[in-house]
Image (tube, rainbow, N blue to C red; front, top):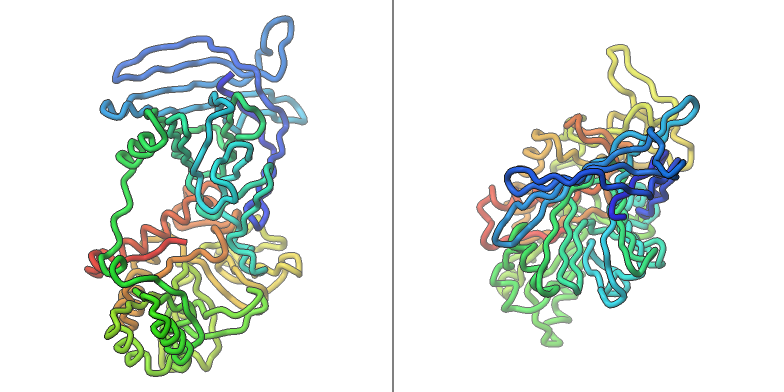
Length: 475
């Protein structure tokens, strides 16, 4: 069979991004009842899915499916596919409605698979079960952001891209944004794709080789633009922190050893804090230059510019409360941001959640040790109870407009940055988060947050007129 389904009762997603599925019933038996050819290069298959066969037939309450293929690009022969499953066994006391679609593809012992994100411990994904899911934001409290699990049955990745190419010239790209499992371990003859939703859709391409398949895919989806020319002629981009003296000293050592240096990426430009939450030291999530930590900032920038060295900074979608003495004489972005600029936590997901007299949700601080008790907040708090930190809601146009203007003013104009690292240090957004766009919940929006975050950074560069010489790195 090439189509399956299951009744997914729950899905647990750990802070590392590891997913555990709990199924009520799995429908592995497939029938093909009809194949119809429609207009505009469309072929539709219909059939039923079953858990067992009774008297040579599937039970009447078995779920059904439709699988549609549509030719969307004649030059590349790209096929868009859409799988829908529905129905299932429902009776008093249980509900085995098919709500998890499964798709199977044929493979061979010799075929290798590549892609699905970044930073795996082996090049080919053959023999792995890859869980395409951002680590949870809760990783931020333990210093475990962007963890990777490399065991054969449990592989997660922090750069979630539901696309693979194979040595046989196959390219498959899912359009779904839900956390998805690609299973290359259960069978040498088949691979499978599972998602916690009743609809799977994507694009299928067939090339003469792996490189040809990748060329076809990037021809449809777009290719990365070349970096500015200055990044190619001067040398490395080196990460640095520690304040003005430390950066000058690091650069002096590199120059003394004749190491070519194109740019420096300064992580703690917003100030320095010692944080047990992160297992070490980090910068404040305020995204405004801290001039006490980096005294003589402009002189530092001028000296680096004379050596042909560009400066990059560190940026995240988080904004946190900073001490009172650091708010004097500079912008305090956490205080500027409106309450609806942040991702919120669903009231029914918090123990003891309540509502105000006007019906507004009262949401509780994410107290990881106290079982959900803590100070009430209007946002989803991403740190322990001793700190307050919100995550920007990329579905809120007002929040993104304000963010882009802040980037222009604080990074590009005031701090004169040439590039920056747009990082998600705590992984993806919370699974029980809510957003300004009501259609997005924590599960369905989890993997697409990184893409929307990257779009906001890209637009900030373009709107500032720095598209030619500036860039950002999405981490």
